Amino acid sequence: MLGNGVVGILSESTNKWERRVPLTPAHCARLLHGGSGKTGVARIIVQPSTKRIHHDALYEDVGCEISEDLSECGLILGIQTPQVVRLLLLLTSSMTILLNS
Image (cartoon, rainbow, N blue to C red; front, side, top):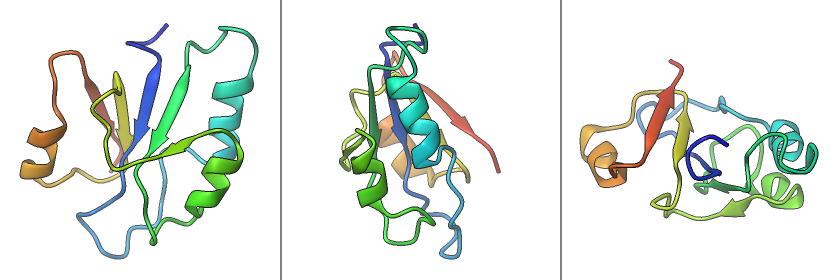
């Protein structure tokens, strides 16, 4: 199991044109329902976004939670580097943040 089994997906705030996502709803469905305990992902929390190429409802449809609060996440995924203030608010001692810019 990776971390605590709770994965977060950041809403992108650095670039107003950024629509990419680190995980699509199909990826999330596979992680959440891919077999009993195989992926180690128990929950996926997605920060809400009106800019994302995949709408929040599509993530909810596959079992993700929509919430601004990612404090429970052991792993947070994003595309662009978040603003420093936002990053500091997210960090806890048991959290890993992966970005792909």
